[in-house]
Length: 255
Image (cartoon, rainbow, N blue to C red; front, side, top):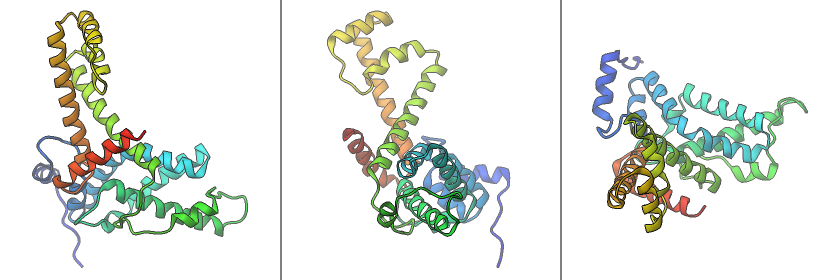
């Protein structure tokens, strides 16, 4: 059996240039699946980048099940290490699926296996503290299956994506040396801009109320673009982005 082709540094850049969206330099889930067929090392590097977004959702979910902070951190670390280091990525469905669904199914299976391992060990030694009721409900499912997601996991997913988009937005304003202006506009990002508050902030920023309204509009539009880019990283095709954004908005609205 022949070994997979290996890309040199310049070739890797060319491959990523062809696959990645011109609107964003962020790693896409589709990129990971495509590169995994030719260069697993590059795919693992890309997967590691994407997993940074999902650290908090995974940890929060594990913490809610395990109930112990240190053990939850260890399990989260072990889960991502296993995901990145193994060929688990090869079991993902190339034709459909979202990264968050794939990751959650993988996490369910990981916790199930950890609990099974703990049952085989002697009492008192590195036992995973998952309730029997939870394990029975957990079940096993292939990563490509449409396992029902947990509301807590979904909320943390939505918060992680919006936080990443907001951080990128803040960095853009910081790079433009407009931190003070950004902080003044930030309260209007997701809330209604009342005339009284508009006038108050405009006076503080030493701009007209109309100029401030235009700035708020541009800020919201840019935030929407960045959020769309973050969502696009985690789906397989552009056609999936709108549906995933609708899901994200529904999750945020239900908080």
